[in-house]
Image (cartoon, rainbow, N blue to C red; front, side, top):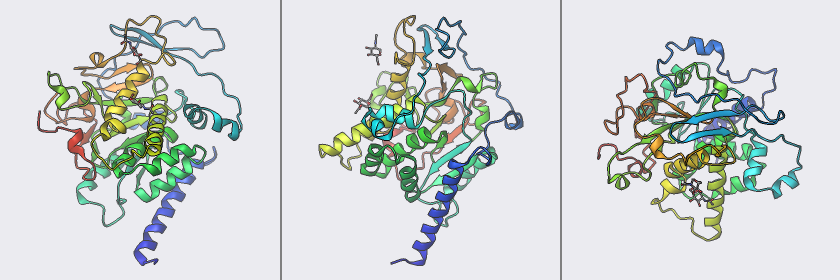
Length: 391
Ligand SMILES: *[C@@H]1O[C@H](CO)[C@@H](O)[C@H](O)[C@H]1NC(C)=O
Ligand SMILES: *[C@@H]1O[C@H](CO)[C@@H](O)[C@H](O)[C@H]1NC(C)=O
């Protein structure tokens, strides 16, 4: 029966969808979500004094048809170069469906490092902040994102709206939708959602229990060209102790509660393809269970971390000919400022985990503290992911 409450929820969902679809379909004459312009950058109250360890520039000896290569000299490892992408030709939908999933995703969501970071902030929760059911404990944190990013489009997507949004964005890649719908736990869907929305639309994803301490325009120093990177990640854990494996799944673990990306970034493409294939495989074998034990490896920070390291060591994106070995956790342990590998910025633990009082993290007022994670997402088995006070 269509009760008043249900009608209200449905109309709210429809309105939100309408809004999202409109802003995602806008033609060049319509106002786009405000990009990071020189103006908005100038407006940002203080420029960060911190420096990114910048890669040395090198002359490229490529044939002229290739775009200039982005060169990232990696301390102690050698140099790695982002390969420029091959030009695209038009493919019919039927032909596209026969291609590997990664190719389909690349075609649907092409990556261009030269574009601006879309000015979106994506969050998900059971209720929108407009609902009376939205928990008071999240209000201040949620508002901090809007306050510090007045020119951004800020969306808190409910589970119901997320289903419709995914159906809209991934209509042409049905395997992805099948996998999304098959995931048996909200926490798995929530993990998958962040990668999916960033792959398709880009911007910032941040968990509902995070507070913005600084505007994203200040996360990376202004002297690093915005067109030289397309993904910003932070370190979640850097446990420098022998028994680290008792506490964390990786020696260096990247967090996925806050991510900034340009649409189509290959790391997002790879993780979406991985989760899609893994889910459909488990579904076919009847192994998709509500077991919460391996979420970290299936969709969570362990998989996220592996996918990033695989990208750093992928000869498809980096020229390994002059590199002296793989990029591993050793290049990130103990870092106090941002590091850039190819088109990825890695922020130190203080940036997205200030105030944890361990693993070298600074306090909330540290100049490198950008996002505060409050670990209050009650629907997630956070205890499995974070050892908060234990270490
Ligand atoms: C997904 O990635 C993980 C970690 O790299 C890997 O172990 C797993 O085999 C991958 N799954 C698929 C289906 O590619
Ligand atoms: C480097 O990483 C690649 C891909 O992850 C792997 O196949 C290779 O064995 C690694 N090489 C070394 C020297 O560890």
